Amino acid sequence: LNFVKIAEAYGAVGIRVTEKKQVREALEEALAIPKPVVLDFHIEPEENVFPMVPAGASLNQMIGGLA
Image 1 (tube, rainbow, N blue to C red):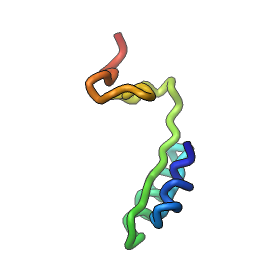
Image 2: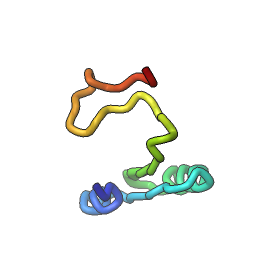
Image 3: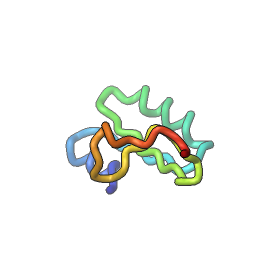
Image 4: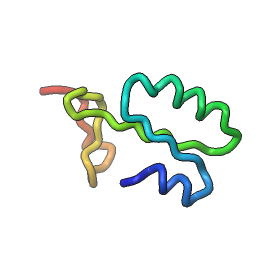
């Protein structure tokens, strides 16, 4: 999904972050904008960011960590 385009369709601002070095700048930019902002962080699966909710699953099916 393109969350930036979805945000824009609803009148918000969408900011995509694809690299770690972009995080601070994106957060500062988002905080300076006087309207709703969606931050779309692209994280490699190998980073193992938890908890994760699989696509189409409910919150009670979230993955809490490596088994």
